[in-house]
Length: 275
Image (cartoon, rainbow, N blue to C red):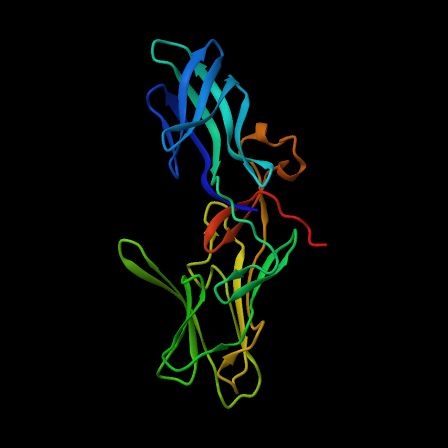
């Protein structure tokens, strides 16, 4: 289960009447204060999801249920409570995750890719059928986001592009691979965040997890089945707040696991070892 990270380690003062906008229609609302306790409410689309009474200095979390299992979608620490005419609390180490996680299973298809392995060390996708490329072609390979372009000025040169229609259209280009047709040995290229800006990169921690590798035979106009491999490897991120280190759940102790998925920062809710 993968959940997009929407807010990471956010801190702010929350006053009654001045809600904490969490994105995706969600917000955290301070409903009231009683001594050292605060009543926090999680809302979505202005409708209450759940409320929780939290003591000053305590950690808090809100959960959602997915396939019968509860997952944390909002967590943080209530650092300070100020009970005054205008009640206010101070929040720190707030992390918010999408409440609509993506379930990844072996055999799932994404564009021309099929998930070939899901383990506690990586998620791997390979093209499930050969991909034919002609001169000047655009070949879409992943959910209309990632294209391979074949140049029209040489026999075969591939560059890795991403297009997306938002307010405007834009393209991000990766390094190119030029194939010498007279050379019978296979040609290959490996794209990472260093060579293609669409792949996820976290400048704060100086890390990336995604890669796309292509292997092809210069004697054919095809990328063979399994010749295009997308892989993302999870990494452990330590909590900035020392109080979060002992999370009482083995998977989240000392930090949380995340990886890039489709160019986005994603938290792993649960990654099951393949049997």
